[in-house]
Image (cartoon, rainbow, N blue to C red; front, side):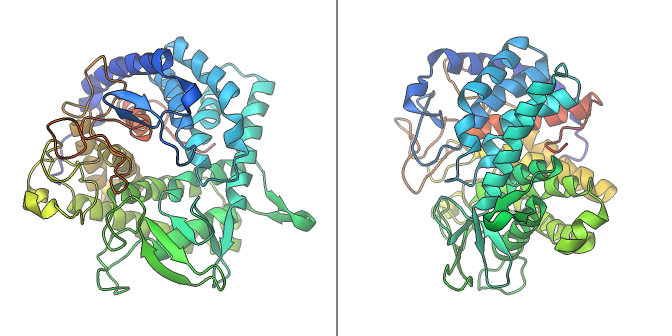
Length: 452
């Protein structure tokens, strides 16, 4: 991609103002028109949100978007609906032992509300605070219990596919363990065994860094620095690593760009979180130097890969090895075309990655300026047409995302050859989260963070 070195957060404010105006209308349309009897909204078909049964991982993004809308604009309507919907609908997600998505669902709702109270944006209320904190404690413990030990004695939070499966996505969901740990909560197991949520966070992040991310060190014939496997498979009998795999990408040996984006967003924000801890808290789990070292190595690798393998304007295609991508020529030397005839772009990967690029840039200071500018460059593109959805009849906020192209779930409009013109709940939520981050930077407001 071609990084714009002069963009500032303030330069994006006009686009952010338009985004929040459109966002309010989109949220209101979903509130008025979507039938929750069908399940949580997942992605749009012909501009209307619909559901798709796989796991219940998007409802926190729906109601979290209402909370972010209030945060950005001060519109009390969205605070009211966000609070009410969190209380009414989110409790099953707190105790959902069948998914790896607790950081997505519960930190986006209970976590955002607790953050607003900590910032003084909500009036202090002891019982309301206790309610949010209890939900986050239990969510972190439920996430941590979904555990498989590997041959080296450490382990990972396994995906909904089963105990053999580590997903790259889960690195972004570690925020549930982080908040639970900060609230002083452990996972209690048989015989009153007390398990540290921080220990599980560090071990999962280390296992992901060791097996899901490649560093150009010769692990296999396709070991390119920053390449990321969506899924890593382990032998459940002896705990040994067996192979890379992919569920939503093209192959185990290419990079599904949304899986890459989850790592781009996850590692920098965990590095920010680690800065709040004392050295003594990290010492039992490898120590600050080792832990920050492997996280920073992973973060730089995936961010560099994104920058190198993305179109000039910062929008990625859905997989760097997609089978017809070669028909576009050297796609890294042109702007992305969401209406091409060969392969879909994924705007949701763009907005997720942009936030991570900005966070890594800020974390590194002067050394990270290119990452910061890359993140702003991506958002400068995606917060404008043809990605920003200006059609009032369309429920989505950010167009040209996709869910599961290999399964054929994504809508291909009449007259088109590839999926385009649709939105997804995680893309719209993360666009709002990234917009709020940049808005706060531009206005010198408190830095947006998930941790306490």
